[in-house]
Length: 184
Image (cartoon, rainbow, N blue to C red; front, side, top):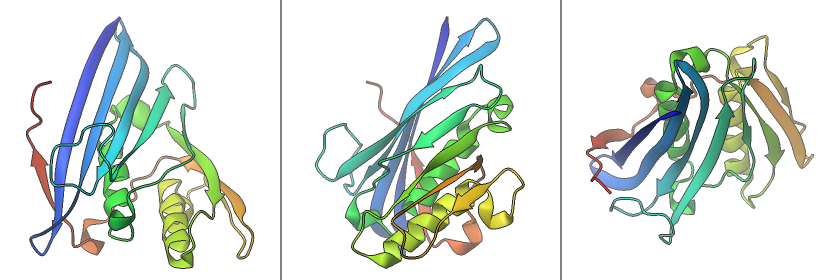
């Protein structure tokens, strides 16, 4: 079995002021020429240093995509980024880069699915997160495969659909610098 590793880290600023970092670390596993799975993590950090697991103020989202299925799915649960990074477009950028980095033959059929959980005291952040999930599953562009069930005042809803790119560079003021990742 062939395993191809990919690591990418970006330093995010706004008006030249440091905001945070996002790192994508995943492995594509192949059996001959057939892609079997993609496993990895998206890391989010509020520190201006290379991300290392266990740093205070850092979080990560693990994903595991079974590429042999006709409709491989990324299940989203417990998705949290550091408080300082919320409402700045950092999560959107993280999902955008994953979208851009997935192999094309997998991207065209990958689903996302999850629950809407009101974890925040801030209704603004819950609203922003719900909009991210709506964009990610294609509900905001009325994609035929998307389902987005949310009722105001109801704590839980759900979303699912083909993975869409939630990033629009015209709406973001983030400045992104891709960094060379040191060898481990």
